[in-house]
Length: 258
Image 1 (cartoon, rainbow, N blue to C red):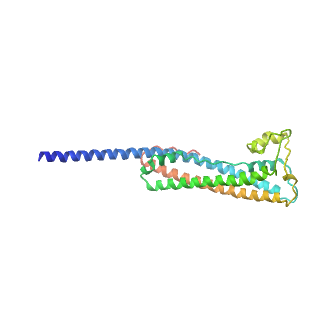
Image 2 (cartoon, rainbow, N blue to C red; image 1 turned 135 degrees about the horizontal axis):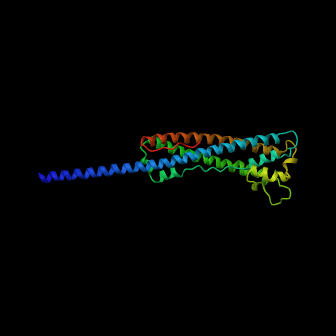
Image 3 (cartoon, rainbow, N blue to C red; image 1 turned 135 degrees about the vertical axis):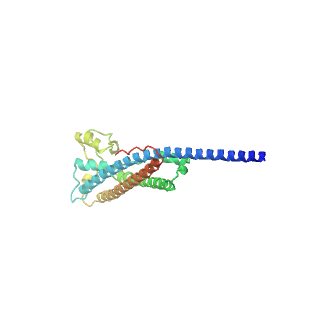
């Protein structure tokens, strides 16, 4: 009888120890997952700031497009003025988007995503980052199609606009870097406004093509504005959910900047 009781106690002790080990392991995984969530939250705060910058960039793009459209869609020759030239430079630019996602990818790679207790939060994270990847791909393809191939090929490749400061022969539009550089360094020394655009009569096929390319770029910029706004709203909603999760665990939560 004593031996039987000892065996029972031994089995109970082993089961208890295994249960404690399992509980401790689950606690450890939950703590690691919470730390990972904090890193994801930091990425989301940075992402929100990037979406604001993207929106500001595309608003400037739309302003430049409106100016170029007004200058080109006229009954006379395109006026050789610095504002039109500067707007064409802005249109030739592009903003490459790489939203931060390192913390989320680590969360997935380490398996800590599965350790999150809230299945709805897990699903929301997966859905948000899948949509974010799609948005980045859309912006990349728009930049390649409209800015690089269509507009860049038309303005630079076909010589529609080649503007050189006086006395410079080693200069290209791609070297400008920004409209600010054009304004502060190149235009004051006397831009020559080279290229065919300024001498094309109204209704010329290349002026019509430029208007078509401008309209396409306008649509792309408008789409980028919508995508930036959607990403910011999605990131803000995720931050709220992460804050609620961390608060329920007693974790300190920093207020997002801005």
